[in-house]
Image 1: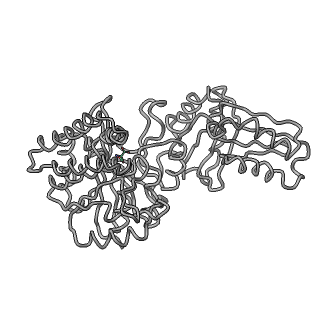
Image 2: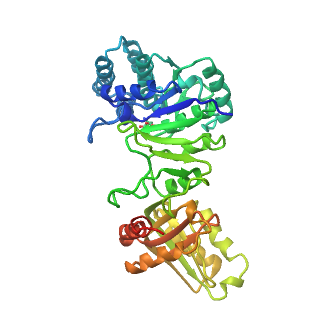
Length: 445
Ligand code: ASP
């Protein structure tokens, strides 16, 4: 049973300066159910600006190597916060906090501690401005000895704490280790904190406020003005995030997913926009297009192996995968024919090991032919609407053939949720454009 509570997370650009803070406060205070707020550190105010998190890392690195230059960066950081406080006109001094942080920098408290101060200090300001309680995330978000986030312990402690507070600000991005030291999630991790808080209070919805009105069907750097995605399932989003769709940290889905709490991506600068709803099950929502989204990445390579009678040779695939495993490489796809098999891997992960891997596969399988093919791009065409729909693959391949694009690989997951095609890096943008056009620009019956 959920309780109507909304947990709201605001990204760095939403809290970059006092003007943005005011928009955020308007959004929060316009709805009494927006009770728990997770802020990021102040982000960029303009294109070439520096995020406070990056300033903190730089400052700490200088302090740690006893470079006096850290003082100048520290002053710049103070200036960012003091500027916000002054313009908001609130009665608050962070001087004692700044002194503590400086002392801890000199005592080499660690880079995670340093970076976490971005959200910590911003959280204090936001709580004061809103009149909400402030909860230090180090007291309620926990990692285990191995540095792995401890969901059970966190949910227990955090939910108890928040039960006692009607309105609170809980800074994003960090928690604490069993020894009390501060640890952060990976970059962009405030999204995860928001999801954890939503889970702990069993929220009705987790609103993630950023500077775009949700996910788009395709990358706007490739497709002009792509259509927005209004509803997407967690599973579809996983597929797209893996292939490079950003906006939300990919680990932010897990805490809310099992509890079935939807995530709504919203735009602080256009709060009326519906944004994207991320849900467990969207069976009742008829998708506007057969596909929900397209995403892709360049930089893969294929190990192509040919051997007569491969199909009847027991353990052939295993031997190849063992070589990869032995070299600490995970594979992306494994398309195969009767006498051929290709293994797609991320080019970067191969490092300088490619030649050795080919030799080891040769020794293990004695193939008729083996080659390494570079510069492959993978495109994931994702959509719950594809399930049980006839002709989707045909449309993709007709569109690619029409554009004279050679398809190097095809993979359809058994869930029928996605079709992945491999094309040459050079054809990547064109392939994205024609797949988008065939599903979105062409009026579908
Ligand atoms: N401030 C952190 C970063 O820049 C975390 C976040 O904003 O989510 O990565």
